[in-house]
Image 1 (cartoon, rainbow, N blue to C red):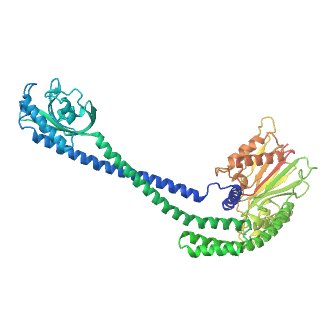
Image 2 (image 1 turned 90 degrees about the horizontal axis):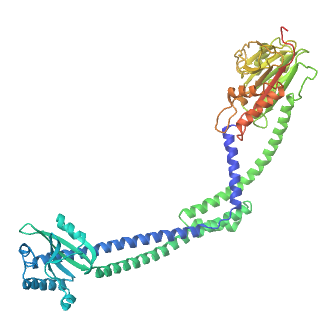
Image 3 (image 1 turned 180 degrees about the vertical axis):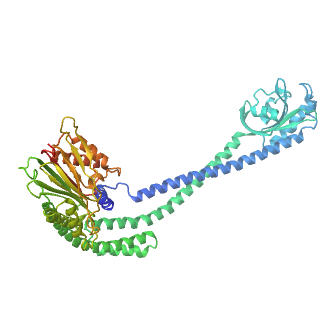
Length: 567
């Protein structure tokens, strides 16, 4: 199986799994509630964000107005306080009581008329901040609890201290024994170089009332926007979802009827397509066209399925015929105790192009061959059948494996319109002495499993260094060399196709020649031809795992248990 076939097989399996999952899945949360939930969430987020932004804007405007009033109050108090008033202050007796009382009345009048709680000025001395001028509230005047001159301000906020320290204008919100205020501090440097701070206070209670009113208005506007957008969104969702619900019902109904036509449903789809000029209308039009095409395809699929069943039946018969052409009786020559043969063939498709064959040329010589036809499927199987027939025809009369290869090549090259070829490795074993003649036609070099017969010999696996030859069927006038090797008692010659060496694992890694040698080393103590072949096949299967077979696999093991030459 090649990569494209593998991908098709996987895609078909995934599609079937998806269909089974969708068929058994009950959808409890449809598109309509999902869209409505999304609409509510988006509108809620938008309304909250809009409300917050509106409140922040209103808050900034209110605070900006308040701070402008504070600045006006501070600069107004600065004008009311005499110019050199602060330069005269150096102690508790610096300003006469009458003068301080008059200044306090003027500041109190200004504060009452301007909406301030207090306007004042402070000076900093070694023992702390002192009140040097201030207004008084009506309650303080009535109860006689006005703040006196040079009274220490023992609860002064930190921002006031910082304004004395760096001379920066500051706004502050704080709570003390006089109440809760938003204040402004204006540091002024007098003619004597000393710094005094003029300030004004506004009651935070009135500021909080204005901010609460702004928050209430922002929330009401946000709720109104939420209600309006929900109403518009509901209309849009219904316009989108209702046709989709109908189209979904049509699709499920036609699937349950195995795509049989229903004129009423097709007419309803046509109405949706005509009424809607958007994607929903395009979807309805596409679904109607798709159903029409599916009905035509079903007829074609039924015909194609019937043809496929016939082809599969014929391929199954062809596989039986192909397998029947290869020898499958093991041991094949029970009367030949010096000979042990085992072979196996695994096709990647119903029929394949790998081949093996063996037969006796005479009482003492065994011809055997392994080959791999280019391509797969029926063409490769036909070429394989022709190749095995030609080897049987010429092996009986040719004098060497090289001559056999040359004759077969000439036949295959003649009128080879399909331009196919086959790589082969052909051998003749002389069972009298273990001598093997061989010729190569562009095939994988075989391995020799040495049994280690003799006093100093050790069992091992080696790969044959063969003469290079060209694949059969390419050119007609190619000579083939005849090589020779010697098998000892218990030795085995292992021939295989590239379906073994190029078997692909899960990570696209190849089995490789090195792993073949390792697998043969693991089985060399069991010199049975069957065990060697099956052990190699098991190693390939373990390496490949669940990956589908991508190429034909042929393994042929010929063991010799006779007396080698020279004994």
